[in-house]
Image (cartoon, rainbow, N blue to C red; front, side, top):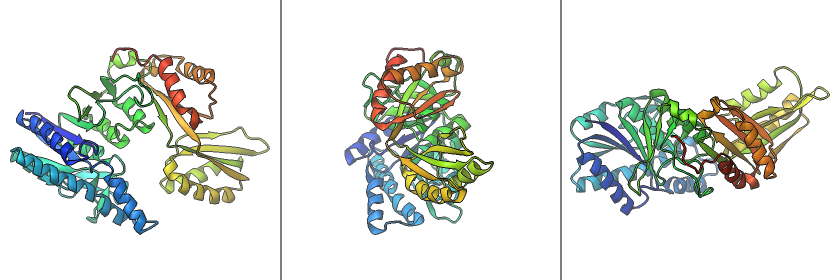
Length: 408
């Protein structure tokens, strides 16, 4: 008897009718004789609605109270789903993050999972019960409710799959898999049959919204097989698995575009040892993730340092950099929000040369200037003007022939 974890996102449970449809999918797996744990998100738009209410009450709501508020969304869906499944004759029981034993650190609104006590879940499975688990939430060591950040229900599903040694963790969403590009941007984008953990991790971190980055990272660490499927149509999805030899035959697996970027340039920084460290240690201590960093060649013992941050962190980063610029003796700083990042991802880059040259040539041909460049073994990213992002993604998708069948 196989053990599966099925996670359904907010659009999949966005109404009573959709909850009923998902209940039928769960019932089908249950009737096939498999052990099953189900993880649910809040109804689509519910977390945003609750966040808006919090902002109306307070301009700067306390993070602990915000977690208590936001965690209520998933409680609604798990209770409704358990009721619906019982009507179908399925033994189902709802569990909150606390009840399912997900213990986190104390970082409210973006907690990290420390450990999982699977005792109650295993007891339910032994009784033939389908646990319906609230995603996105847990408790800290002080028994306070915590949430796992945007997309945290994916993480809940993978955490449970790893702890239970599940055969597969299915992520059901409103798309039928992972595509070579965003189909809304590139109509010719092709669904991938399988993709490596490394490629999926890069795609998720570069703006692909199919899976939460931390969930893929954890799946790779514990070798949890994942599959992204549509909850609205039958058929296979995209399997996220360990890299195999066939994958290296594909030069590029996907192209992404990410508007969630802002660039900060600190101008006239004294070119002295320790200055950059002082700046970025302070930025890291504030919990701000820095992506690309470029330091210009020193002139007259001064240099410019540019780096990118998520737009959501820009306000905090700007306030911090304003103080840091004065502290290190920089002349001034500039902020540019009108940027985007386009990226190529593929494990085939390890064994094929010339990918960067083709990427730069394609952007140049389309009259797109490159502001910053970042590379890894399987990724090349360029920061460009935001207004060119969609044309850049379409041009690169065509250049690397991603709409044509390849070995997968």
